[in-house]
Length: 64
Image 1 (tube, rainbow, N blue to C red):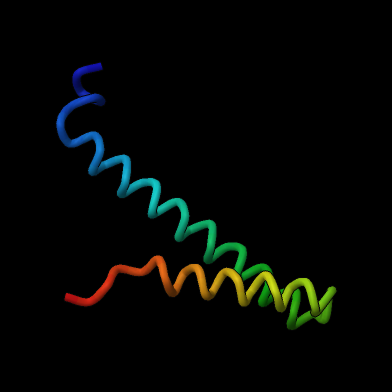
Image 2 (tube, helix red, strand yellow):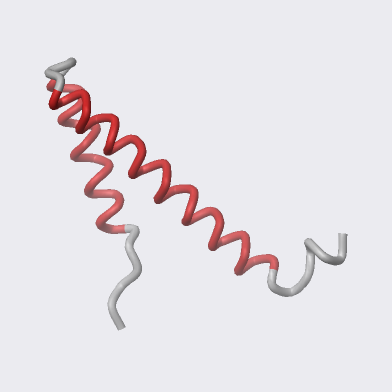
């Protein structure tokens, strides 16, 4: 337990939460783009792709 719950836990947890969010966002964006290319429910997939790309844009790390 001490190996997991040490003082670096919040940083590691935040890192993994953001990485999971970004990975999921890119997967959804990729699937939506693929479905758009295949013309499968274009309105819903266009909306899903747009939402994913906006969320990914705002979740990126700001430049220093």
